[in-house]
Image (cartoon, rainbow, N blue to C red; front, side):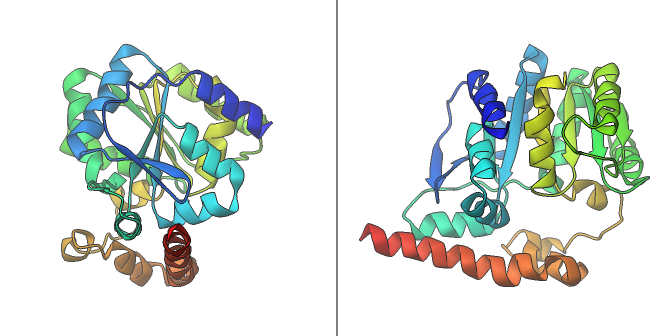
Length: 267
């Protein structure tokens, strides 16, 4: 079933490729500046084309190494932008040029501003009960003209073709949302989109991880001195050590071991 879903995604790819990409550990990463990423999302939304935009960081690359379906999903996505400094460092170690890094908390205001000016709507899907409402409310406060198509928490049965998933999909479609943000955490959000993208009418669908928690003030974000200099992972680890210690303290060394092994093998 997963392979057939991936085939369908590949058949409907519509992005015009006018930006550079690299392949890191077999995963495509598009090197998109912030304004290009936002403009591409808005442009595709206005054209009414169905687009899926993925993000790639060390955790994603580790998952792609271990889960073939996840790797295929990333490579089949219309957009796959860099979300982590670690991926940039890994690329540099392999002699690859990856300049831009855009994480959802950094691009969300730019996207909201562009959507408000173009009359596009956003649906917030994910987080604990009440968190999506908080996130949407704070974003609306900063962008009063932004259209919020709807909000829905992420605590429902996500099994393929479950009654609860069907209900959520119906709600999203009835909202006529232009852009769907999905914050279930990786890789649950990606698998849900893989299984359900065909039935979703939203023009653009984007997994966003913990974005709603940051927007809603549920989890503080690391200081800018850390996030701007490649240490956002340290801030996240300080705030959520129990959940994230393995991702960073085990996952990061594992990723760089794989990168260095590839570098040695090339030689």
